[in-house]
Length: 584
Image (cartoon, rainbow, N blue to C red; front, side):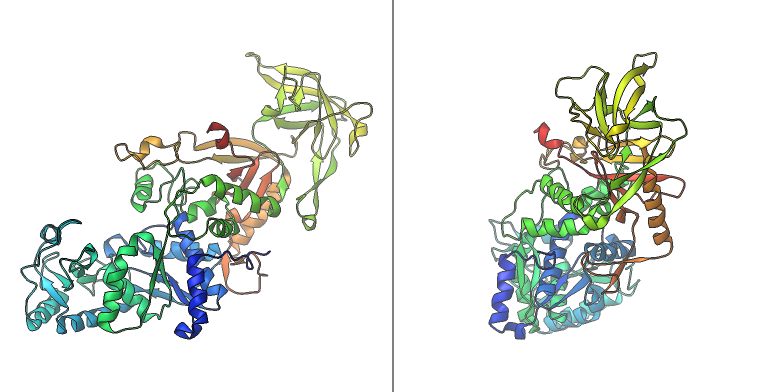
C-alpha cells in the first residue's frame, strides 16, 4: 500500500465522512492549518499538518495555511518563512496562504456591530483587576463597573482606541456574555487590547489588536472552513467560538478537538525551546537534537517517516505520551528501504595486508541497497592498506566475538577473508596497526575447509575521504524532562547528546556529496511528495540532508548543511538499533 493509499480511520475522519453523506456543506471539505508565527514548528505540529492536509487531500477538498498573527511582539517574518518551508518539506501544499491580519478591518467592523447590538463594551479595568473580577472555577465572576456603558459611549471609546488616543493597556473591548458561567472563557472575554507594537505585515497601522479567541472562529468563517480541527486544550473555548459565530450570524464553521502529540525524552513548549536556543544549549532552532521540524529535517529524518508515524499513532480524544522509540522505528523502516549503503569507519584502525602487492588497486563490487534491486551496485577500491573500526578488533576476544581477533579470521564486506598475524601497539599498549594476510581464494567464495562467521566493514586507506561525523542522540536523559515542576528541565540535558569525531569514508560518498551540493547551488527542486515524479505538482528546494545513506553496520546518516566540497560533514539520523532500550 502506498503512502497516498494508507488511510487509518479516526473519529474526525468519520465525522467528515458522515457530513459528506448527509450533504452538509454540499459535501465540501475545507480545512486549515493555523500556526502562530512566534517560533519554529515542532514535531507535535506535524500531527496537525498531516491531519488537516490529509483530510483535504483524501476527500478532494482544500486546506489553507493561515498564520494567526495577532500577537505582534512575538511574531516575525522569519517564523512565517520557516513554517512554509516545513509544510512543504512534509509533503503538503496549501490552497490559500492566509493571515489573520488580512481580516483586521473586517474583525474591527464586526466588533462595532457587537457594540451596536449591546453585546460588547469598553472596559477600563487593568489586567490584574480583570483577573480578580473574573472569579475562579468554584466562584462566579462579578460584573465590571463599566459593563453597562451605553452603546454610544462604547462606540466612541472603541473608535478612540482605534485612533490611538489611549495608553497601552488602558482599556480593552470585552464581549458581554455571562460573568456567572461555569466556563471561564464565557466570562466577558477580551476582544481587543491596546498595544502599540510593530506588526510584521501591517506595520504600525493598528494600535489595537484582536485576541486569539475573537479572531480564530471568524477567520475560519471567512474562509468557509467546514471542519476546524484543533487540540484538546481548546475544547473549553468551543462555546465561545460558537457564540461569536451566532452573534455575528456568519458562516457556521465547527470546531473539533483531538489530543496533541507528546513524545518521551522531549519538550514541546515553545518557551522552553526558545530558552534552549537563547542559552546556547543547542546551536539553533534547526539543531538536529531539537524536536523542531527543521531540526528533524537537518538530522535527515525522511518526511515520509513523519507522515507514517502520524498515521500509526492515530487521532484520539485522549492525551497520552508516545514513546519516541516508535518514531525512531518508523524512521528506520523508511530509511532501510530507501537509502543507499556506504562504508564509513568512525574509529579507524590501520590494517596492512602483508601479502597483498604494493601499489595494486582492484575494484570490488558492492550492492547499493539489498532492499532495492533497482539501486544497482558500485565499485569500491581495495588496496594493501585499509582502515577498519577499532570496535571490530579485540586482541583477546570472548568465544562469541565474531569479528577480528589476534590469530583469527574475518571477512571484509564485499571482499576477501583476512587473518590477523601481528598486532602493532603504541607505548601504552593500545593497538595502532594490524598486520594481516589475505586469502585470495575468498573473493566471492567461502574459504575451503573452515567457516568464517564474522563480516566487518572497511575503507581503503589510499582512497578514504576524511569526514566530520556528528553523532546525535536524545537531548534529555529522562522520559519526561518537564514533568517535575520542582526541578528545572535543563537539569536533565544529556551531556552525550552530541559527539563530534573524524571518520574515514569511502570515496563514493564524496561523489554523492558533491552532486548534492551542486544541486543546491543550482537551485534544483524536488517534488513535495515522495511518490511524485519531478514534473508533477509543487516543488521544494533541495536540502543537504536529502542525501541520506546507511553507513553499513553503523546507522543512518545524512549530509549536513555545513558541508563544503573541501569538508564533508555527516549527521547521524538514527542508529541501526535502539541502544536506549537496553538501558531501561
